[in-house]
Image 1 (tube, rainbow, N blue to C red):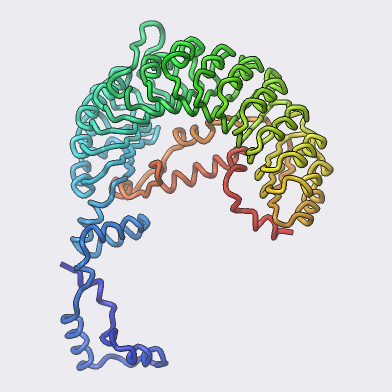
Image 2: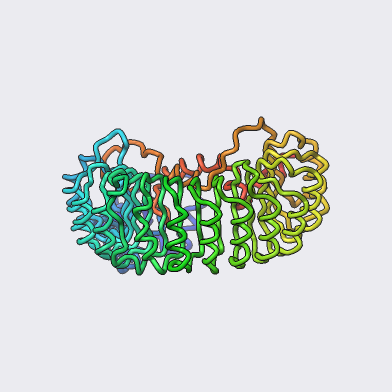
Length: 535
């Protein structure tokens, strides 16, 4: 069957140590004589092929540790390796243009164990339709994760067929699709194991009072995460949110309409087990924050560009959500959240580990209290604040003993404030300063020289418009387009990370997300040594 190719390069004296040492000492290799060639052929014919003795399960584990290119090379060795490699590939990503349909039987005959599938289409191309989706669902009945991107030809009928054929679905993510409430309800009514649902720009959902409600369905009992982005009528998901009593994560980004009523009705009395909430550019007021305060187990809260939220709502939330670990606030320079709200957080949330303030103007009064009460505060980002100067940085340096990473962007800080970090924050490992005109290269060099273990990154560029939306990375995830692929077979072999992205797509996402100052600052300090050696 061709397994002998794995031993074709083994010399005849492989098991003879003296022969190996002799070969290494020979400077000139003479051509093989006929007798030697015959002996070599006999030794190969009589040698044992240990690779063929490996069970398929072991061979599959080896393949799973290889990259895409090496896996494809291995699949060409012999028919057995081709079969095992295909059966051991559980995750594939396909360029889901309309010409994929005739290739589906062959693709899923080889890759018959797929459980995680991504179907992505270029926005300028015609996507697969219901027939292709039904055929895929029949071939992938064990599907647990599905991602649909710009599959505009798929309708409610196709989603209904998918839901009936793939009832074990645990994660569904769809963006820029055109099916509507009937298709979504079909998934919720049939997939009782669904745990994660992410929906962005679902064009088939009608607007206005006549809109069909979505949910709860049988999936409501298993749903743990719901993410809604850029929906004209996101409130139609209200029955699903209210009915998901085991919901742990709720993310709402740029969805129109008044969300206070839904938060008051759903979270105040029914969905109280939420641990993580992200709200960005929503119509939410202090009433909504008061409703969120009923989630006593809340640990992560992002409030991004919500102008109607003020200190009043933050105080009511801090009084009850005492387990808060991560707090991100983008005040959009409205000055409605400041010292009063932050003091309440400092007094009530001693477990706070990460604090990001964008367009918020705290003073030493709230910062000193945060440092005194939040002894576990390790990550702090201050961006676009008019009140963060040298005295505030000195306060942080002298009192934030657990701080490990500090970010300062577009704040009136000078070299004097940066120099205060040389003798404070004993656990500090990384400082990033960006667009602070008062901080010079000399000040950064002085800090590096006096604290050699500290990674100091300085970018003194011109001040630009502040836009640190929490979902920037998510927007790139759904908005970027995949390059044209040579053929659909190549698309099937694109390697994916744990969340289903292809390697090329993940590289593009990393490049775009690197522009987000807050996100890149809280990454691992992989460039610390290079920054230090640049001096």
